[in-house]
Image (cartoon, rainbow, N blue to C red; front, side):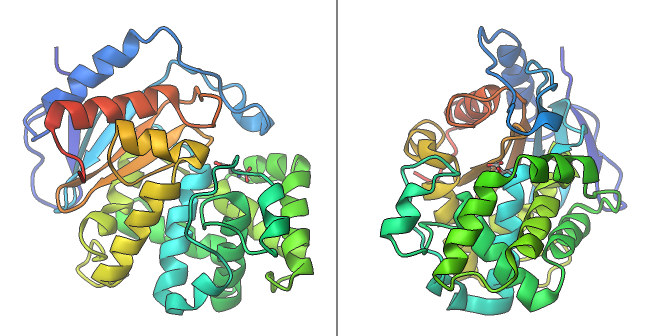
Length: 322
Ligand code: GLU
């Protein structure tokens, strides 16, 4: 039985359910994910996320023309968390070009996403923009450039997805702030090396707001479309140059799934970015963008069913960047 449903963002009529290029593949994947023995455990260090049901599963595919379809909980908003870091990075690069790379590297860290150790022997320059320290640097630069980093990220998601209801969840931001000692430590430590411009409390507030944005698989698959279109936004304007889009995809491939990026590249073979809310976006350049959500995480913080579903997608379709 087909569960796929679809919407077309433009005014063109939606094709009948189940008729899209990858409909039968994602239906099959959803059925397979139902039978997984272990769905992992929701993030518990952010109390607002801890109660999620690990068996929930959604998957959406967005094609470059803005058609989006999905299966399961693909319209259910969830906490984007670290997925928001991709959009913050794209905005910072679009406004600041290569300047950004003076304060943050682009090498895999091989350490957990919130690790402090590497920062000390690398003089306060985080390894990449997707570990928390690096994301704090990106948000710092974006806040200085725009005055409202989190608002810019939310607005980019709204514009690219066509969903004006995407927003922050203040309780999630507050819950992160209440348990935010480690992020505060990272920010203060980098500030001691002069690698943070804002006062640390203002930076943390912007970062927690950015991470608290809720969006669905449909929203995020559409919003990441510019990465499958060589940097071109939904309305045809350039957000990034083709080369910058390649750079973001490359950093996602090598650094987007915490210290499991090697395993993710091995299994899935696509640029991807996960968040502890259980979402993962993945890019098939020129073909489509994918977003999966299932809140149960593995030990490294990636959604168990999410990684597995993307693994099955590239296996069943033969599509990957390799
Ligand atoms: N807001 C989370 C944190 O900073 C993001 C973690 C994640 O999704 O990787 O701890």
